Image (cartoon, rainbow, N blue to C red; front, side, top):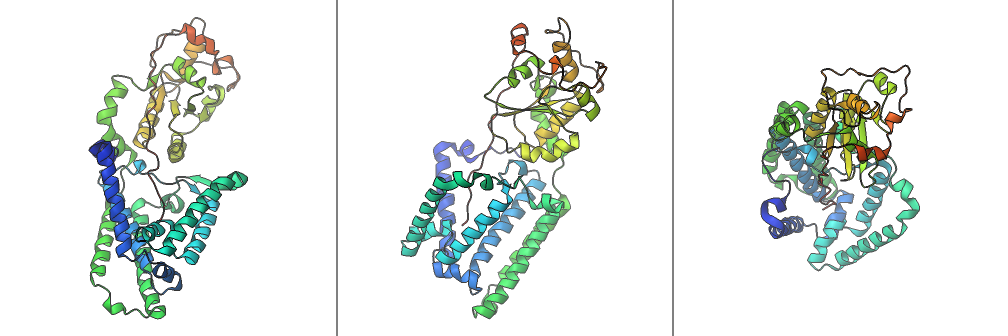
Length: 411
């Protein structure tokens, strides 16, 4: 949302980006090394409650990043929708977590920390890393036998805010308090099972915890940007393209060409009332209310880069508002059916209407009447592709590549 480039290479160039990535990787590895994460006995002690450094370091990184991200989002410096969040596959994730946890206990490393151990020439780390590579190879060779389970219980971009149905600021504060309670409990466990003298722990940890709580309260008080506020930030750029250039309103004939284009994945989002949708709709168009569309936008964002979304209503008023919402939520390749369903019917359901002039009408009433609810059971819902030879239009759809996952894994 702030005037920042989309990625590091846009700011520093390709090779400059490589240098930045190298420095970040080196700094991360160095932080793990000085925290003692290259020693398997120190890491394994986590599971015997003798040394909970892993929990403290990793959760500190998690909560600091969480508070920083949502503070930046609250201040309008970052659009959280542009931050990649791994989609949730519930049961495969649980099984995978259990497998990794058992491997962590037995081997004393996770994949990331084993590489730190390799970098410092530790024999156990080298063997563990080789085991990771063998496991990756074995998974790749056998995944075809359990693909159904691997892709089961899909929940999309599912976050704690979605699960708890609570405002982001509340969730941030609760997670932070939970982490601080875990830190306190971890120190008690270390004293009991590891004989650690808590009094020798640095007092600055209290100041750091207090500062994080204060920032989390700021996030809670400010709140996250609304759809209207996000659109206001985009309207300087997108507004003239929408209203003056009409760069996102596509002719019915272009939509027909997209329907027959096998190189794209087309989503036709019909946001009219259910009664109007039942009277007539374009074949394969899906009916959503505005609120329903707002709820599924997170799932739509996970569609591949060749996905094109076309919003339609009877005219253009409702579809334009839905388009603004989808743009504000950072859905790529979104267009509006020019003139709506009324213009579609003018072009494809009337005699000699193939090059009919566009007439934008106020409101969202259908101008065509039907004796019965035809739905898609009429030729106009699926016009002949050959009609494109008789219709003149200016193509406007340009696929916009979206950012994908940049990486992941544990420390």
